[in-house]
Image 1 (cartoon, rainbow, N blue to C red):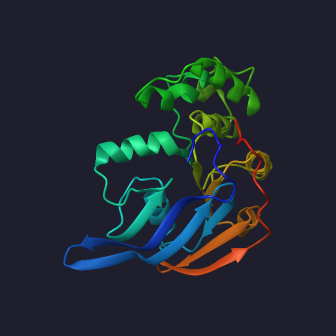
Image 2: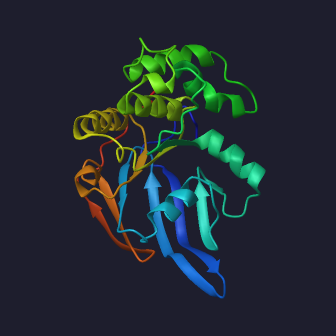
Image 3: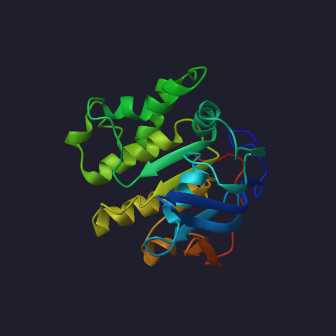
Length: 248
C-alpha cells in the first residue's frame, strides 16, 4: 500500500475480522461491538449508521487506531494493528488515516494554513514542500483567500473545510469522518457533502459516521449497526473504479 494513491483500485485498506470490543463497568461487562467483520477497499465511500448505542463511535475509534479490539483482528494497509502499543498506533494514525470531526478540533491560536499543516509536525520526517501542499489544499477547499485567518474568524462551514484539508495533508489511505455535518446548517451541509463527493470521485476512500440516512445515501455502501452487530451492508450504488491517483 502506497500513501500516494498508487495502490490498485479495490485493494483492501481496512479489514475487520470478527472484532469484539468490551468495556468493564464495575462488575458488568458491556459489549460495544460483537463479532463485526467488514472490509473497506480503496476508492470506496462508506456510511456507518445506527441508533445511539449501536457501536458507531466504537467502530470509528477502532478504525482510527484510537482504541484496540478486545478480540478479533484489524488489518490496516496490510498490517495487523490489533495489538500494537500506543507509540506505534500513533505512528500508524499519522501515516495512513485522516480525521474529520463534528466539532472541527482546530487550534484556535493557529491560522488556517498552520492548522492544515499540523499533522505534518508529527511525522518522523517533515514532508518536503509541506507549506506548498497546505496552500494548494486550502485553495482546493475554497479557502485560498483565508490563509491567515484564525478559526474564530471563520464560519462553521469554513472551519470544517479547514478540517478536511488538514485530513488530506499527508495523503491518507482512509478518511474517517465523525458526524462531520452534524453542527452545520442544511446549505453548508450540502456544500461539505459535495466536497466529499468530489474527493471520492478523485479516488479518496471515505468512511462517514452519521445519524442522518439522507447523508448516508450519498455514499456507495451503508453499514447498518445494531447492538454492536452488523445488521446489514446496503449497496446504494455500484462502486466506481478509482482513478490512478487519489485526491490531493
